[in-house]
Length: 126
Image 1: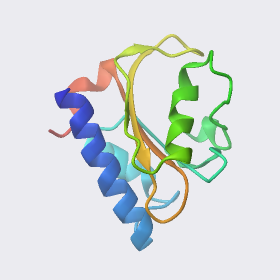
Image 2 (image 1 turned 135 degrees about the vertical axis):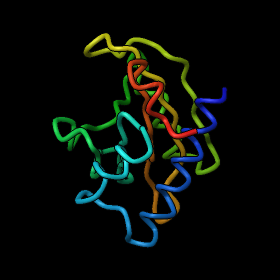
Image 3 (image 1 turned 90 degrees about the vertical axis):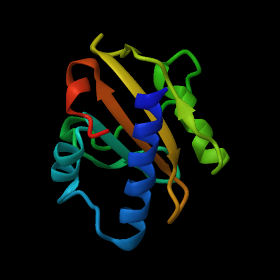
């Protein structure tokens, strides 16, 4: 829970920074390195990733298929008060262990998701 709560705090800061126009695709990598976050995904109102520090996933759409690990995060699109905290688990597509959390964007409808690779656990700024 300590890790999940810290990641939620980081997501709240991210939403503030996006709202102010201070965090964007040009400085997301630096933000993640400074804060020890492995991956960040910020989506539009359809759940399509528009800002991330993982360039290979730009444009990824959080799926509607309930059998996928990422589906649960779409709940944030329907209810801005929803907070998602997943346990460490293997990702569907590469079997690396990650913990993901997500909250709603404040400036518009969308998801702000932060992930921590188990291998990066000591990098997270607590």
